[in-house]
Figure 1 (cartoon, rainbow, N blue to C red):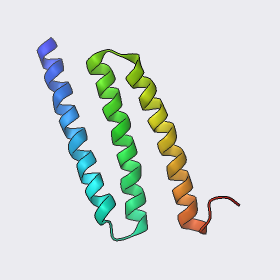
Figure 2 (cartoon, one colour):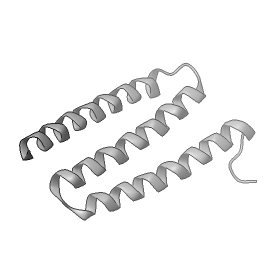
Figure 3 (tube, one colour):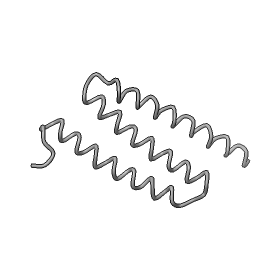
Length: 92
């Protein structure tokens, strides 16, 4: 049973890293600013999920705190970028 859980963790970590690489490709290549913002938002989500997987793998609470910080930072940056794309300014 433990071996099956370890294999599932390694496979999910591989999938998350692959998703992060594809997001980086879209972030660098994306034809429009909206594509780049969505790629950045997805990259934040993948980084948070990867931190959660590391927390499960190493049984450490520090990774869960990192995941919470990544989620909060990603949310604030996504709102700021969306507001910038809509209005052209962040602070009113």
